[in-house]
Length: 246
Length: 272
Image (cartoon, rainbow over all chains, first blue to last red; front, side, top):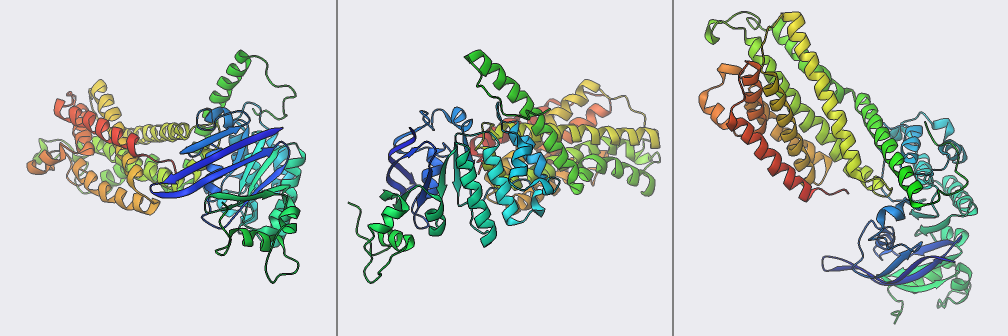
């Protein structure tokens, strides 16, 4: 079953084109990765698909809904973790979870979620006193507290230490195992390779490849590299020397 | 108080969904107000200025300033502190709007708190409503404490025009809140918001007569102050404190400020 359908998405900011032409489909229950260099339009794409920004062109269907028209309905079913969004400094962990769960008619049990994310020991700690990893885990918990069918996670592990990154990956797998479809924006290739079932590679606002990480590696043609990694494969698709997608 | 378990079946029928949503809206609004109140109390500087400062000012001035609590021939045999009490209310309004509310709004936007909220089914407008509710309550408590201090400690007797006083208070608060929203709307960072906020704050206090209470304000200054929101609010509060109706000019200035600042703020305000 397809839960996200995006075709020919376009978005401009003034005369700058952020997304030129992006199309992909995400199936229920998969972890779908979006990779590409900075400024290639990854974040804008997920902002359009979650209704945070209005697309200039193309059609978007998320769980059968149009994100621009059915924003509120969409938000009851889609959990979103954004890069660089914080909570008030003096808000405690449990208060944030309690508050956000009250926004949904059928929320998850926030205490259980707090436990699963290893935040119970920090329940009375205020946001500003949490470590980077703890903030990130709280952020994921808030994205999941509404019992979403889709979770959109943007640069989930940026700024985390290696152990925290691995813990977060495990967390994403567990989220998927609950039956939640995950859209993951990242520029860490090891992360994409370990986690994602399929990847969309974006370059300058256009999709240049959609495939499994293994297939992207297998078909990579990187001159001078005998056994290319996913990073080599993606760089070959998105780098300055890459051939134009059309 | 919380839904602790995930319901096993989805609600059937549109009515069930609607009432459930209605309940969710009520519950989440209540939670937002409680949360904002907690955050307000945890900000010691904020709660000090809004709640305790007006009363403290009355107590300090009344007991430490020579002659402040003595009848003075310059002002018709009345005590300066009697003139100062309504000005304290204007001071509280200005402080809560241009310091507390403005800083909270600007910080929330800069940190992405509003953006984060806009990813949920709850509109950031509800957060704004919750913040305004907390602000108004803090203001009422602060003003009540100041009036109480004036009455209990210094025995200030007053026969205010209650309806006029309430009108002046509500319109004055609304105009300053609208001004704070407007500043929050056009400043890009919280530093800029705080800077511009204090650039406006001190002249506003001057216009309100904080340094030149009641009849001590020079006529020329008063004529300018009449056209500033806090100056007009202060004059309206002073008139109704003395038992008169606020002057139509001051009420008109306040209504005009609400319409102008509020309209512009609604047009310009960005959530992220």
